[in-house]
Image 1 (cartoon, rainbow, N blue to C red):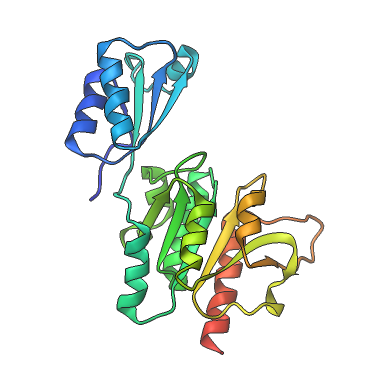
Image 2 (cartoon, rainbow, N blue to C red):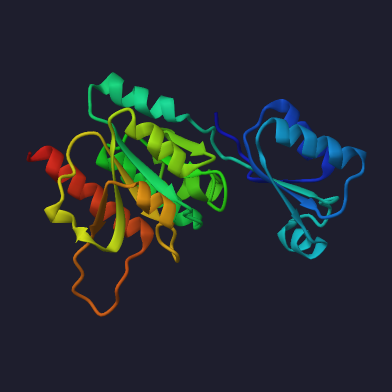
Length: 247
């Protein structure tokens, strides 16, 4: 289901969104404000496992588009999230080995949108993102995906490492991108595989990297040593496509 708004402000508006079942990515609440309406919002958000950030008034004022936030601002997902099972079932329905792209704290919505677009074109069955410290399915992401968000399921998980471990038990292998790894051409990237792309600045977190079976590097010939996250994802995704196609 698609939603038009990406940011909503005010206690009554946020509470109504919670109760109407809209997909909320995160809620920002004025630190120290816990009167009746705010307590209700926090309680309902926790029941729905929605991320709550307690922030200073200055932060809310900066985020507010109306100047009438009443101590509460929420980010609405532009699209509903899928589940990891939805992604795996899609691969099964197509009779294909699962191909999933997992994003370890990608924060730039334009990168997320571009990666969803790449995932769709490369034939990935879905994208998995973390609940914390990452971009969600905002309107900006939807626009950057150029429509691919309508066709490529995106699942949000609480713990990326635990998700990788669970998918390993289902027979998947995982490769992450890191410039200190093995050349991507020298790795076997066929079969059921998950491609893990790290944060724009920090790269792959140590625990997620530890849970991957392979670490792939992209050969570089220039004067700098890194690529944009969405570009790196595209290069590695199409190496997977190449190996699957010409195996």
